[in-house]
Image (cartoon, rainbow, N blue to C red; front, side, top):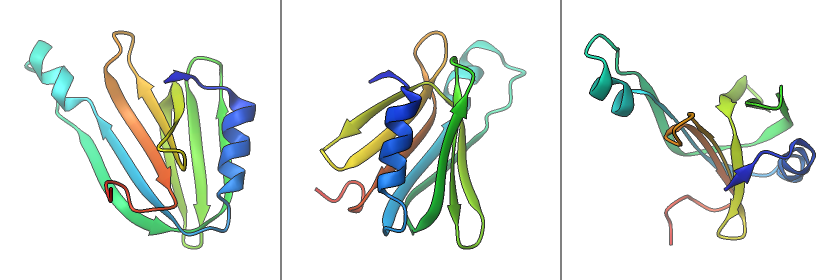
Length: 118
């Protein structure tokens, strides 16, 4: 993975507008926080292979972390705290947010084929 390049990621998101895509969205701090602080709450969210179509996509940020939003017919999907990106298996856009120690905190994976189908 490499640091987010806003213009490149925005272009890739726009190429997926009005297409049926599969989303993997995951957030977590629980796997990390509970090991070092017994007062920390474990929180997380996970959804995989939700099929959606979005009409608008935007990535914004301050140079340190970014937020990507996808406007669907019924609302928005967004991931905040993104830091890195890559193209995975040629047709999958993977955006991720890592903490200062490189641990995964958030992932947004968008694919035109079901994720994990190979």
